[in-house]
Amino acid sequence: MALVPVADLLVQAEKGGYAVGAFNANNMEIVQAIMEAARLEKAPVIMQASQGAIQYAGLDFITGMVKIAAGDEDIPVALHLDHGTSFEQVIRCIRGGFTSVMYDGSKLPLDENIAITKKVIEIARAVGVSVEAELGKIGGTEDNVSVDEREAMFTDPEEARYFVEQTGVDSLAVAIGTAHGQYKGEPRLDFDRLAKIRQLTNIPIVLHGSSGVPDDQIRKAISLGVRKVNIDTNIREAFVGKMREELAKNEREIDPRKILGPAREAAVEIIREKIRLFGSAGRI
Image 1: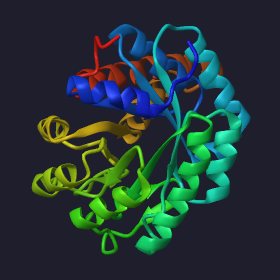
Image 2: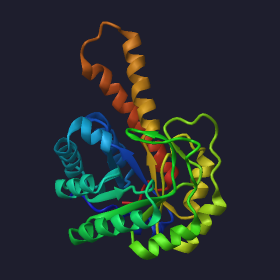
Image 3: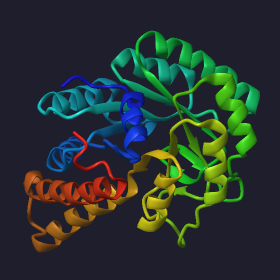
Image 4: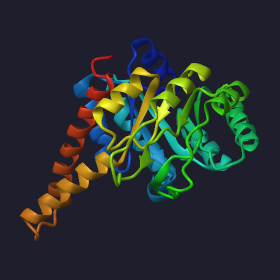
């Protein structure tokens, strides 16, 4: 089926009290794995492309792969730009066929973040594209987006209220204790802060850096209004880990399909686990 905006998926998630998984589409096999997991679990999904993925594969290749994969199944799929840090990048993705974009102005002064986000929304809404923004800084590293742990700063609930009132953004990524990449210790999410943000903004909340967050904390975050959960590192770990296993079995193997095929299956399984955890299985 045709790609849909993330906002449409989050409206349904809000009604059902669940979250939609947003999985990074880093190569063909992972795109296929996301679709296979969604088909098996009968779940809506969001395929994300980071700026790093776009630089690596090219915008047209990523859009083409996702459109082909989504067209083969009767499953609601959104194509989303993850952490677009420049206005120009966001516009290129809108023109390229993305149905949702994230403008990440979290490192900018609040007024500047608001101004550029409003500009993005004005253009995106005119063509039916939904917009996610970020307030607060999420620690860790993702492609070329890096925030030092000392610089990481939690989202202020009152700032979040003001930001949403000024922009009318569709969803908001918040910093409440998660981090991009692999965790050095067990994360401890600030649920009181999350509950306050949700109360003051009343829009779908997005949880970035969710790989490695314990399942019980994910469930609680969803119960408090998180409607989009981003997963990348867990998929990479499963995918590359299986590749290493296959190469260890036969170091002389030169057929990439015999290495990447099992890796794809490993990705399917971890994505299915996340879909069930988020409560989005069986929603279509």
